[in-house]
Length: 326
Image (cartoon, rainbow, N blue to C red; front, top):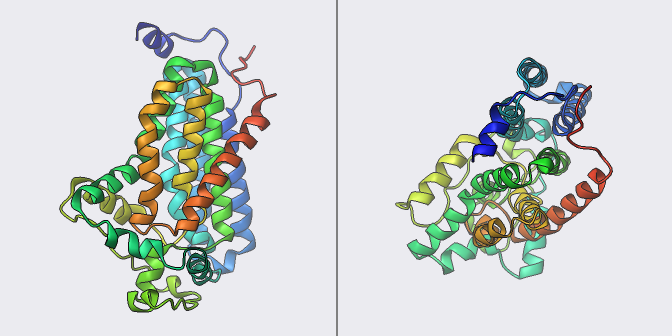
């Protein structure tokens, strides 16, 4: 702990000169979406506000760089990472505004789900396993998503500090890769699609095309399970605060969790890995249990998470992270 505090508050003799790799990743996504907004300007509501928001994000990033240059130490360096990770909660709702003009594809995914499993797992899972304890375990798993991210990042910061920038880059770049997929693949997930269609039709295996339904109505069904549960309430509050009918395939919850587990293992944080493994397993099943995702979304998340990790690890293996300025 003493060494860590020294790292936080000791001024660096050779501070970094430019932006960090994960800040460049964010700016690349910002530029991509800025161009996308410009090209589809007439189809996106509030396009002006979305553009202004991106300039504000860029300004915050530059401001954090300026703070670090004035006071180059571990604390201001850590603050740069915290700001970019925190901005994920701003980028996510933004996705719906980017692709709401595209036709919804849930009818295809629900049909494929039926063809693969001969049922709708998101419909039946919570009905078969309805006990309050099981419900709370599922909600615990789903809610552990961001705490797992924090635990892995802090584990790297404490024990593998020289890899911290690279790990934050891998996590953020994984998010942005999935966000690009979500822009062009408008799938809302069962909690929105089932509500829009009606549970009777879903139970009968009828999956109509709802076209641009979510442009006019974004009603989400409540999570199934034990409504008096503590973790149930936390999941519901999180969904009410920021959930949108978007970003269902592949499951970024599952994918990013896979990335985190690879990071923990490859960084030799084995205690962290084994501690988080039960939560990762719960999270995988919980995405379907609470009807946030189809089962095929969760399985696709396993694949996309592994691909993101190994692709980004390969892409960064020759990059000299942590290079100091002169």
